[in-house]
Each structure stands twice: as structure tokens, then as C-alpha cells.
Length: 600
Image (cartoon, rainbow, N blue to C red; front, side, top):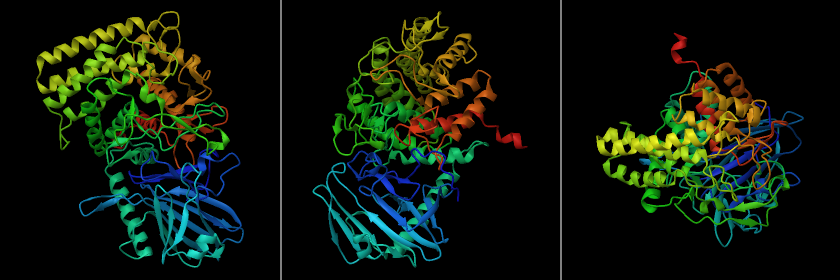
């Protein structure tokens, strides 16, 4: 088991089952978990109440008396994490954490439940269990009651049951005791188990292990960096709320993008932009199940919103996500505020129309799908395309969701072009010649405007807005979505200009112009991955590989990335784990890897 914790910041492992998620720190403390949905009030919130380190409230932990060393790693190819702890005398324990997920009776079994198994490894370890769920963002302590083999935690809004074969008295009083044999704890709905506790926990672990290994075995992996890609793929899958198909941008809220920056946002919702990139990354690995589930959700978005479409929705298609500040807890490392909801649901971000069409387009071309797109689906998508056409040169908040500044953002117009271009290709696949010609004309018109109005001769680059002066990393998507030839001198010049202006060594910031909070302080991880992709496309592959390796080295001890990082310290910042960042790992590995036939 690996033991090196490369980043003290956000040294967390993600467990989940596409219904619930939890974050486990390197000392086996569950410090973040929302139930029964990823956007719910957290029952474990200590991650956001950590001004003086992680306290016991809002955690579920196992402590080893006199612990001197610990190590943590995922079980290969799974979402099961093992943490081992030892004291100075060599006595040790292993803590296994996961959420059950496997096929049972012909359908996916994924209860809103966490399973923790603890077993002695050596000697006579003395342990203590601390289980302190909280409600109302940490403000309310549940009432605790005792059953024959369970504890119940009761609030006005929910009741949790902890089924366990550990001594209940020791759990209730948080008493130190010697662990002689394995114990299991199953925390979830207030329901009795069908079988014995240890028997059920063992079954859940074995079946969950088998499920993930089977899922992983079917991925079409690159030759190089396979472990990194597998971990990224599992992480992206865990960010899907499978009940509806929505894909959340991150598991957390309010982890600041930079120290004391106030850039604290709630990412526990489905951004259509982020979800498209997740689906495309998993598709590149031949994992289409996520896309099929997401398309169910996306089709409901389209049917419910024939006109204006928001940039994001709740996982249950909630349109209203009002943003508010929570006074308790104080914030990640004391750096509040803690926000719930996201004002961006009120924004006009015109790239959303392109992201919808891009996300849905494969359904019309992929013969593996159980339900392929048809003419009716195409005509519904045309309503989205009409919005893209009407808005392609209108000011908006842009993909970075600027709150006080509207411009005709190049990236928004670019995605409007993508909507028209993909509709043209869908019409061609369906044999709809007149519609093909219409969307081709519109795509050509938008393309000509972007090339003319976003190019700045003085900067030698495509800029962030029509007629603008400032650089923005999102322009690198021009190449990724097929808008421009990577060897076009204007694109090559743009990459070089951005390297001079936006890069701190290998790492890239989002943009150079100050926003509502001043200039960006940290590198935005997905922008660095966009740079890597661009470098590879324009022929600077050795540099691209070196930067990719630098990014992989900045992952935490179990291979996860947040939204941002500090180039100076290597610390991870921003919500975690960030789907955009994990997408970058997959995309760049697929772009840069040597082909399998190089082994022949």
C-alpha cells in the first residue's frame, strides 16, 4: 500500500456509488458526506469547519491509540479505499471504506449508505470510534438512540441508522478499547438488514469490488498512464447521480479557489458544459453507459426549456438554485464564506447551447446505443440550435461566469458555432439535405465572424471577446472542437501568446483581466490540460508530455485533483474532486500515449 501524501492540502479519497459520495482523509476520517443526494445538507461537514484542523464534530472516524504512521490507497480498479494505521509498537489496523454498488435482481443496487470495515492487522491495537453526524450545516446535533445492534441518529429532517457489530456502549461513549476481531459499520437509512452485520458487510464489499473491476476491465485504455486514467474514469463515474443521469461538477461546495480569496462556490449541481466534457472523456474510453444516463436527463432539460436554457440545473432538474451564505460552519481552513446554491443559474451563458448539442450529437451516430437519436430528437435539438444562432454575437457572462461584466465572449460564440456545425452533421446522417444546408450556412457565418472579430493583430492572438484585448485560455478549445486547424499560424501564435501571459511554468491561469475579485491567483487545472492538448496538436509533443507529467505529480496521494493549484506551493485549491480536472487527465493521456501497436 502506498503511503506518501504528496499534498497536505485536500489529502482526501472519494468513495461513492452514483447515489451518495463521501470524502475520507488520510487518517480514515470521513469529513464530508451529503445524504440522500449530493446537493443535500451534509451529515458530515468537518471539511468546511477546519480553521484549526479537523475537529471531531461532523466526522466519522476510527482512531488508533498512539498512531505513528498511516498509509492510504485505493484497491486497484475500484472505488474502495483502504487506510492502514500503526502505533510505535507495530500494532495496526486496516480501515476499508466504500459505498455498495452492484447488480442485484437485475438492477443496480446503490443505496444511500456508507460501509466501513475495520480489522486488526498486528499486535493488540486500541481504537476509538467517533461518529458525530450533524444537521443544518453543523448547527444541529441529532438525538442518539440505541437498539439491539444499531444506533439511530434522529433530527427533524432525517433519521440515520448505524448497524454494527462493534460494542454499542463503546461507540456511544467514544471509549478506547482493544480491537480483537473485525467489526463493520453500515450507516444509511433507518432500515434493518436482511442478514447478519458482518455477513452483509462482507457481501457488499465482495460484490462492489467485483462490479468495479468488471466496469474497469471494459475500458478502452491508452497504453501509457493507465492507472491515472482508471482513477480519473472511476472518479468521473462517481460524479453522476445515476437516479436521474445528472453529472455534478464536484462533490463539494465552498473550497476557495485561492487562499482567502472569497472565490467560494457550490459545485454540487449539473453544469451542461462540464457534463459534456465528462461524457466525451468517458466515451473516448468506450464507456457509453454514463452518456446514455446523462442523455435521459438532458432530454428532459430540452423538453422543459424550449427557449432560454440555464447553464446549470439541480440533479433533479431543479431550475431555481438561489445562492445563500451559511453562518455555520466557518469554512475550509477557516476561509469562508460557505455558499449553498449558485447564482449562475440566473446567468445567460450562450455556450450552453453548443454544449447541449455536442453532448447529444453522438446519439445520432453511435450504433452501439440502445436508443439512437431520431428525427424527432433532431427537431428538438434544432430549437437549441436556433437559440445558438440568435445569440452567437450577443453579450453574456461567459463560461467563467463573470458576475458584473458582459461581453461577446469568443468561447460562447465558438460553442454556438459548434451547435450549428453538429446539427449540420446530424442532418447529413439523417438524410435531411435542406436542414444540412441551412445549418452549414449558419456555421460558416459564425465561423467567419469569430475569425475576424476575435483576432487581435497587436496581441497576435485570438482574444477572449470580439474586439477585445485580453487573453483567455478558453480560446484553446477552438482546436479541440474542430473549429480551426491546429497548424493555422493564428492558432499557433495564440498558444505562444498565452504561454507568455497566462503561464506560471507549466501551469496556466484562466485569463489575464481582473474580475470581480481581482486577477486570478492560482492556475486552473483544466486550462493547463487544454494547453497540453494544444501543444501536442501543434507538434510540440515533448513539451506536452513534460507538462502532463508535472500535472500528474500534483495529484494528491490517491490520484485526485481539485479545480485549481498554487504554482508556488503545489497546494490544491478549489472544489474537489473537480470533474473538469479529471477529464483533462483522460483527454491528455489519450492524446499523448504511444499506440498499442508500438508494442508489436
